[in-house]
Length: 532
Image 1: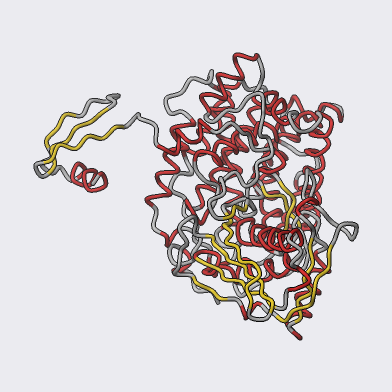
Image 2: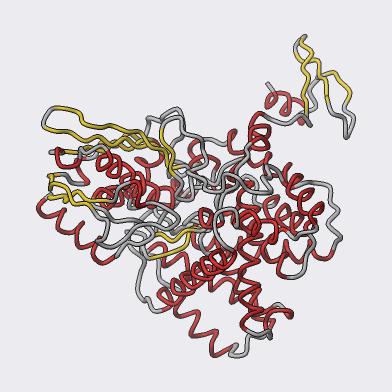
């Protein structure tokens, strides 16, 4: 009804009513019916988010994984890990003689280009995203493609604590079954009720069903099962500042006299010591830099039929000649390069940090590079001050990311690319505003500006690959984040559109968006660009 009302209004149709700017309710007489639109009442999603007492850790918003997709690669691998863990916990692993995987919706539609099928198999064999040996996992997949053997293995649930398991110490080996990627059932036109990224895994002993579970990959590598709360296993269950909205975040920060980063650190310290938080964040930063270095060494073309040329290495060599001293006039060139490098490495299936997703993994490293090299208060500081800037950047970014996770979505398959690239741009803008000395209000404003100008962004990967338009889109969004932060810092934090309002707008836009533009490769560039 409301969409029809909007069209009639724009066309000058005879809808009777009085529009008062700033009014809470607007009434229209439409085909004999009095229709009221409440524009300020909070939605059920908003109310639910504000009532949630937990916080999501910075280490859940930023986690080490592998490319090319957090929802379509990391998530399915974690689902398989979780399935094997339950088999181990229940004493069923040794009885398994066969397994089967069903993929639904977006996982089935674009799984081939995202490595979903191989990720599910790797998870069943005990490879964990955070600690995976990429060479060993690829060797296993190559053997599987030849002889069909799948050696089941994994870790018990107790091994998944503050850090992810890895190595042989707690690993449990099961039987070798015969199962290949081609044996999976793909159901791209069937969307399960909870989320479009659905998968079922079943284990059998002969004809007997031992265990069957349904998992949903809800974005950023987060996995939920059945009716499980959509926290993805959030670990900060009793934080001192359980904010559910940007309004609450600002109120709590100002009442406590804390910056956004300091408030988030206080919440993190409800589970870990401050030193553990700092060390963990700096480790994430090192992985990001290693990812960039690995990408710059690559030559040739990205995987797949699109024949997209690797550009980051050549760009880097050119920039080192043109700008050896990091001149401000080349700042955006470097931002573009870093975003490009991270997302090219992601396209290769390399090790990346979800930030908050793999498809948007290049934005935060690129903006952080800008902060470390082009911000006067950081560039010429000692190592301790630079490390503190990194920690503050991640904490402020994570605080904003939590709001998108709680109040909307960071899944391209659920709300389009505005949920991935848009959220990452907003988070990066907040982080940059924080380390440039912004007040809590300016940090919130920076986050709002960045998302406001990503609203409606579709997810239409050509060929189902995280390459076109994903890689260049990260560079554009990183530049957008820098601009948003600098605009916010020119003001005093007072602005007309709040972050809560723009997040709710993003959520509603995602609901209205056709499934063709939600990571299905059924619309947009995906159907207008010839793959080969």
